[in-house]
Image 1: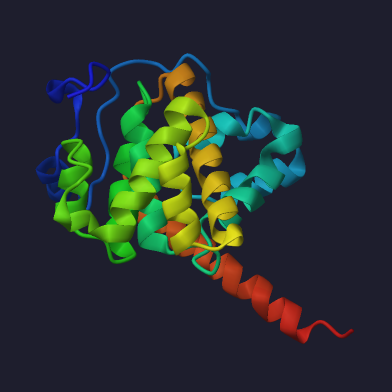
Image 2: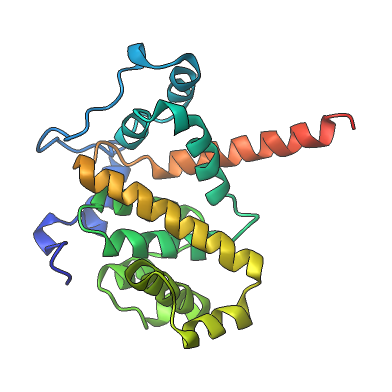
Length: 228
């Protein structure tokens, strides 16, 4: 177990499942975040409108402090979660690997476990990542490759030649680039979480995904109905 996630500090699968079954999904705060969330009263109108549409998660109100970038960041985040561009199960395995490797990013882990399960991942895959069993059969051939690629990008900025060759044989340049953007997005978000010392406020990752999918469908519908 890496030193940055002692077992006593982790949210186990059982704890997460119990919270979801109870319909609660919330935790008591152990402390106050170092970066205070943006007060909606202080937000510019586009930022306030965006916050009103989002699930009440501390990560959104914290990033909203960067008011000049917040709305565009949300759009980019939605693109990262769009299943048209990269397999959603493999995407979530990559995101969870980023969270696993980032000290202080438990918030990211807890939000994305239910997203992985919602898009077709399994508890066995979560358990394998949680235990750093990167060769586990549960991950599947592609999953093991994506997790290895992700770990090397996070730790070394670039994969080794063997891993890159394997990725190039399996995925298109478009898919590899999309995965790199996903990895970069969640490395950035994890560092906001770690720096702000965000406590897990609610487990609403699946709700965020549902909202992204609704927005993506609406954008595609608008594109089809907009006259040339």
